[in-house]
Image (cartoon, rainbow, N blue to C red; front, side):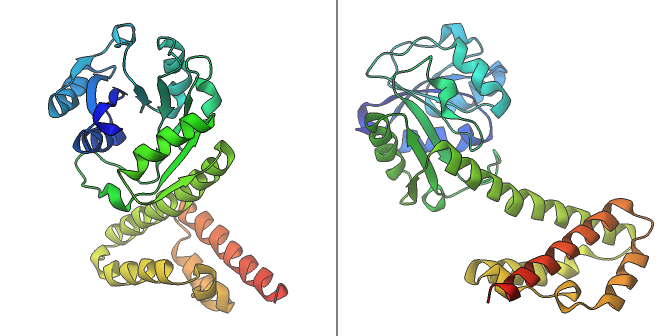
Length: 266
């Protein structure tokens, strides 16, 4: 199936830079790459031996699959500018947070082809370890997206829009929020002339435990122990930083509430 699949990449950013070469590797033919920035389109297009364009009106109209890989807030507008697709053509976006019904006026067969991972252009990602959340508006589209995804990864799950958006929200909290806490922690230590690298072992152990255990069952720290004296001392140390003070209070309150709920549910 993939050897005869002609694909147009609508986008040349972080996701496209990983997904499009991977689709080429499994035998797909990448016919065209679009980006508002022609240099970005050209860079990716050269890697996959495709044509580049920065004009949506110049998109090829005979491709089998059109993959929209642009910012979430641009998906609806971009889909409106695409040529009307026929009954044997498919349209999908790779967003975790955008409804697929935005695509219904453009294609008879449409859906989502969402790789649940954080992508950066120059950071290698093994797609075989990435879950693909797929959805089609009909059985034909679902089957097409599922078959293609399974050639990239064994981790393929069919999810509707609501389920996919909940996975996306959870990924934001786990990935983006925890990364932000790491950012603030490093900044705090650096401002106090301390070495952020000292926390590397506990950071590694934390995520190893998260992956191997129930995070709610292994919670540690002064909040769950109700060690109020320590918490007061921490807050004194943070009194000049309103942002960290608010975060410390909010997370400590949440930890206490979660522990209370768990005790009450036993």
